[in-house]
Amino acid sequence: MRQRRRIDALALDSYQRAARVMLANHLVTRVYPDRIALPLVRRWATELREDLAELFGYRLEVTETTARLYPVHDRLDETVPARSVNDRVFDRRRYAYLSLALAALGRAGDQITLSELAEHVADYASRIEGLELSTDRAADRDAFVDAVGWLGARGALTLADGDAGGWASDPEAGEALYDIDRPVVFALFRPPRALQHLHSVRGLLADAEPSPAESARRLRRALVERPVVYLEDLPPAERALLAQDRLVGEVEYCTGLRAERRAEGVALIDTSGRLSDTRFPGTGTLAQVALLLIGEIADMVLDIDHPLPRRPDPGPDDELLDRLDEAIPAAGVFAPLAEDGEVPDLDTADAEDDDTEPVTYPFLTTEWVRETVTALTDRYGATFAAQWQADVGGLTIEVLALLARLRLIRPVADGLLVLPALARYRGAVVTVRVRRAEELFVTAAETSGAATGGN
Image (cartoon, rainbow, N blue to C red):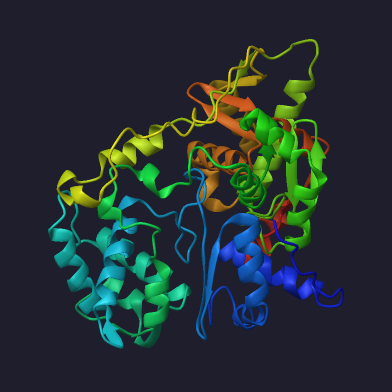
């Protein structure tokens, strides 16, 4: 590895902020994630291009109007879905509309109306079995507007006139006109390989049998992409690499974050809030209930009089890969350019013979989790957001998804496994303000932050 250039100490913070912006967003435009991000990245374009390629294997392209990072994926991650401007998680229909809208915009001119774009997407959708965009259905219109809003937030579309909400309410009366930023449209979707040439989604992932240099890049990628890198998730050779101060130090220098080491693994601690997609602990009902649930889980784990059963972590499975592969239309694969041969098993390609006993983790049942969240709702529900007060089942699902995304738990079929990083928050103190009777009729703005928590 060549000797990387060192940044002047007075400018290091600026360089690190640019690196965090690029690693967190992958696409930076004149308006996304904010108006100061692109000038910052352009200032450090040369250094970032070299360092991100050498440390992580990422390719960075910077133009006058966009900065696009093309990452290398070692595994699929279903914990970071696309979200609408209203924080609604994209479902399959929204992803489909988003993809078809990008295809339509690539063939459009400088402007397009929302109804015209809907017509193009509806036409494309009619050619796909099981997919349809009917402007007569409110659910279809809402999903389509969510996809358009996602593009608008990133600068691919700029509202010139009208209102998308009005069209979604009544397409006969409402309309919206958008300016199209073609460089952003073309930068948004640039897969490493043409999708129609793939037999399997695995073709979009990194090499299953990396060289020693690429193994080091995989570890650096894991440090910036995962909340926690557990040693048990790594093959023996990579565990030894992760123990090297130099490897972790290179990531710390590039990002400005500090690594927290434990016997079970390593986590980068982001106090800046510019690299993490989820701040925790945080505000809002989900973060508060998650912190309350962590306290209950920690009490169960530490109860020596009633030890919890333990189970090994089944590890990442191929279910998501298999589901995506099943959706690939056989007619869309161009055989002469597609890869032949067996598809490697990414979860076992690096495996080595190991006679040691598997590591086990405390196990809690689904029933215990449901009862505990119900009890927390009964006790603190008056401080929760209105949408969750009457939906304990949905609240439980979302809270567990948050904890799983942070790699504090591992959901399994009949419950969850408690992962080591959860112990970091076992001493958290949660203070819930109980309202007096005369406070029951306050406005929504006044109720925000009713429950607070911290380390």
